[in-house]
Length: 338
Image (cartoon, rainbow, N blue to C red; front, side):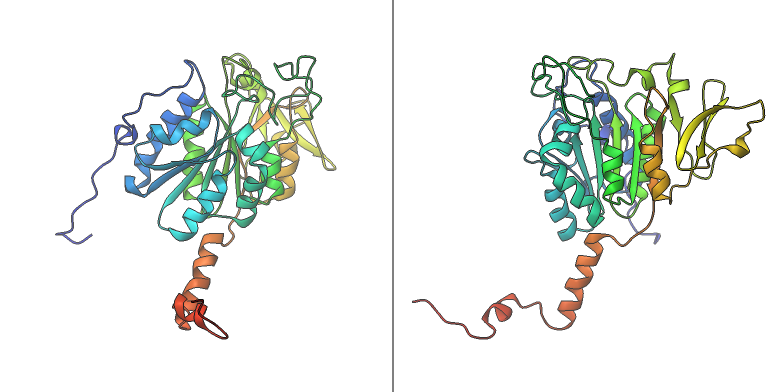
């Protein structure tokens, strides 16, 4: 920095807190996510006016009102489409999509898939409480089979979709999972998503204490989470358990839980590799009660981002003198309507 250049003001969490009253139900997991995002953003070295939050419809979609940044509260399921247009035309902005399991995986499933397929340089935070909260407790695309709700009084007949599996299927270049109450882990995933150049997807397991209390109790409760969480760390063996005495190994392409000791050591365990898409799929299909729930980064690879490719095409066209829209429209056979 030149000696006479003005320095960027130091930002704090308070700079990202808006003047709007936060109107989620007391105890909602959304509060935790909001707080951690507001804590992490000041550390990223980006001017506040360069952040944009885009949401659709649902409890999570109130998010832009509570961030003292630019934002769009868009329409149901379409946040990734709006964010794609924004990032393509303003690649200098840090674009964040906030969505839920209903908004992002039901009406918005198609838009989510294509945003990840295109590798648009945006960060997608999908809040998963396994229920429709805003519309008062109907089962959602991630609700478990047999879920009893107001819209399924004898139990849902739908098989649930796994958000991480969907993101990996779309070949998302950064796919992760975290939990609302694991604040340090949540912060780490937010930072890593920001640093990733391309589409970043984070599933955030969260509680809805009004309509689906205990949705992720096995992985969030202090008494059980040690044995029910598998924290993924690149290039490290898959070890878990309160006493770090359990692990995951492969038999062919099938994972199995083992107890360390009696001839089984960490050398026998599966080693996590964030670059391995096949391994990501295997991990995404590991679910209770047979397996612990994996959290962390499932996949992180580099690939040219959609917005960068589009803007390269525009620059090449301009270099060839094709930036005069009136001239392009008037080229060839034209006529004037009187």
